[in-house]
Length: 232
Image 1: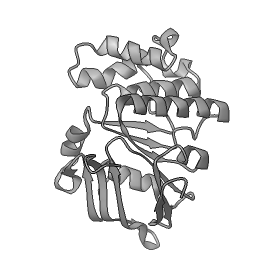
Image 2 (image 1 turned 90 degrees about the vertical axis):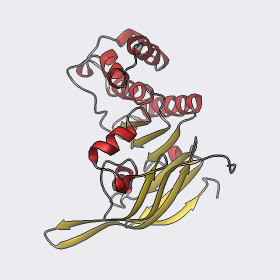
Image 3 (image 1 turned 30 degrees about the vertical axis):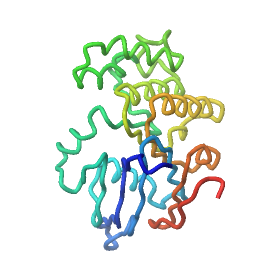
């Protein structure tokens, strides 16, 4: 990494506590991390280690109890929910384990939606092109319930990359897919991010998938216990 690359995601001493019947539960404690422009970073750890909680904080989907999260140069602590949504619009993409497609819309309409919200008057052409890139040009008019899991995740990938985001957050993107289908999704994910120069923040329990990234942060009981390149 060179000095000219800017930091697009940063967490400084981030903590998250929630109230539970048995008292205050600490989900994350004193997490520090940074992700640079165009970098792919994996967040790994056992189930319950705080991976998805951290992803939600980094993306501004939730607020930290302590510390500060900076996304694309702006402190999320200073923004309300609308302000965070405005910051993400057109600059941040998401891919989740459970696809999160709108059931009443076709594949084409699902991908067009963020483009239309951003005022892109070429939304239909752009969405069609992206769906062709992920091998779904023959499925444009199909709704999610008419698509397989792998096809739904390919639609989700096309939607996530539709606005050419600076950062893509992916939470267990292959978690609901069989191994062969998951492998194809991973190849598409890394191909698209490389083409667009998108920074990738990837939560995964899959070591092979984590090894595709430039660096990884390992969580244990809500704390970062190591930060390294996969070969380290």
